[in-house]
Image 1: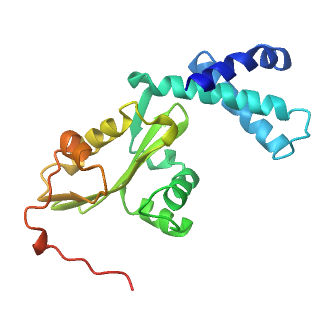
Image 2: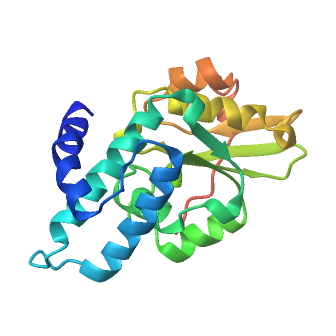
Image 3: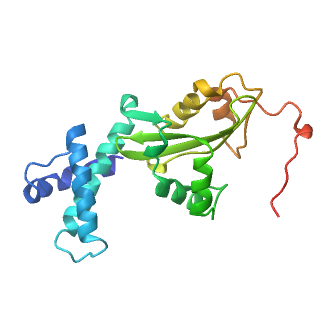
Length: 210
């Protein structure tokens, strides 16, 4: 994070010259910068020879630095179940390319899974930086799955906050079974979600995909 902040500080003067009046030091600045960044992405694209490519890089670094700084402030992180805010493309890219459990999952499958789950998004400003979903009948059973925090935002306690937000959701109280599967985060889910190993794992069965 220090490297990002140093780079952002280094390019700030150039940005101020090229874009008079623009800074990223408040929420209003951030919102304005994101709009300008999207305009530049549309205009510049992948053309590294474009005269505004340097500004695109600089502005992107400043926006990211502000987002990282916000992520370090618990009060600036929001967890929401508003499905309209989900960045479906981001969720699909993470699950299909970076997760160990859903590599290769198609965009269509991701969209269908979101439509049929209670979804939790983690946001630093307008940017989504984490996700989880719960498959449930809201009466007897729930399955917590696809939980992740963006690598750039880990180490700030966001995973803990997300687990706590999921298990505290009013619609998920009083369920007979609330389960999940994890390869290496057992202690995290035990401490912050109250999950325990199955009491009788031999009683559970799964129908493998063919």
